[in-house]
Image 1 (cartoon, rainbow over the protein chains, first blue to last red):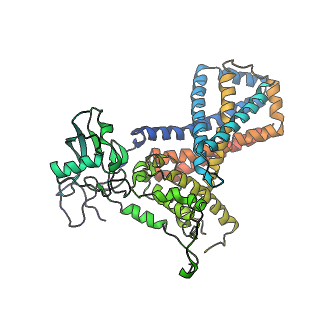
Image 2: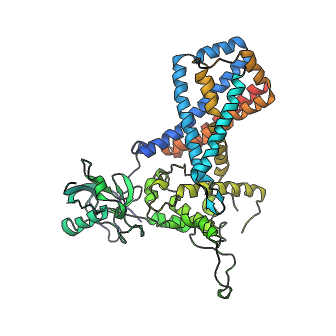
Image 3: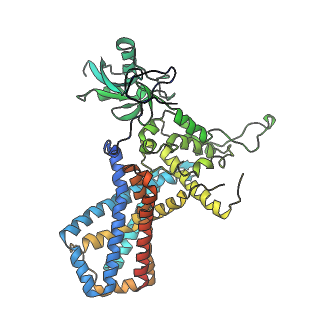
Length: 143
Length: 249
Length: 116
């Protein structure tokens, strides 16, 4: 379908109306709350990468010796980093919850011919997450 | 409840206008009226030049999809009274992300091309002769694809999906759901024929699981689920293409 | 079947990274980023942590924790840039920066954990 250029004399070609195409705004994701929620979910991946960077610094400090690690712990107590870690933690939790809640969509399980309800597929993920978190916390804190 | 309600309807006449504009109409607010009733009232009594699509007025033909206050809706299934208490007119616009032909009528040529690409029909390697009888299916086998077969091609999912608007090559929720409807049908033997779409860089991989398509679908087809499942199939096919590169039709 | 795209590979990496991130990152970030600095729990001693790090299983675990989620970020961030900022025409650059970053991070993690 050919489209006639806008502007200038408005002429009409029989059987070929000029279609109007709206350009998608750069801020399309601000227009509706579901879109914004989606973009926030995607941006949580930045905080995932931030966590990896943080952990690599932590491991490096641990390897370099007790003084280096003490300096690292001191840095972590600064208000800026505490605030940043609060925000990061919120986003990482947002990732975890949205991830587990969407998992059933990708893997519908059928038992005895009936499709299992979404909650039943999401639930084991949460249980596993609690278990795993407990085990890791035990390893870190038992000392 | 007030007597009347105002509708702000997008108008676009290609012969006259360079751009769409809005026209406000006041229609009676009847308890049982849907937005489609309001549009029909406008066309009958107020402004006969208003153009829009509709047919069955009962949510099965898929013709009357439009944006109502920014949400993709079937206008025959959206009650006017829900918008009565807002202190502003109800905004009615054509489906988002489609070219507008006139007023509320959009061009769905692009979708028809994409739909045909996924080959939405039963493909058989060998046909059974009539004498051999029907292709039998257990209720379980029907259940496997039934949800995806409920699609009425209303295109609300396309209007909801940002990737449709951003990536013209993305095949789109309904088309992929319909591909899955046939892939999962036990009578179909054409899953390989649909791999062209599956393994094409733009086919389904543009989907980022926004999930809006499933939320707005009036028939609860869950296209987002269909796409994620198809991605898993895609991974298997991709892996197979390494292990068995000679595999073909 | 002619393989026309390698997207499935990156999607699998993204999914694996998403699972690792969802299961393991919250507790780590909570403990080391909030609970310990804020004094909600007794901090583990340096020696104890160092000993924990010595264990080969711990090192493998940390390597996975610090590599796979990076590929999750790379894929997701790539698409966020494509769709959010509509700069898909820069996809060669975006692809290199995202996956390059992930590979770099993985390399650093491997180096750090191997050297112990």
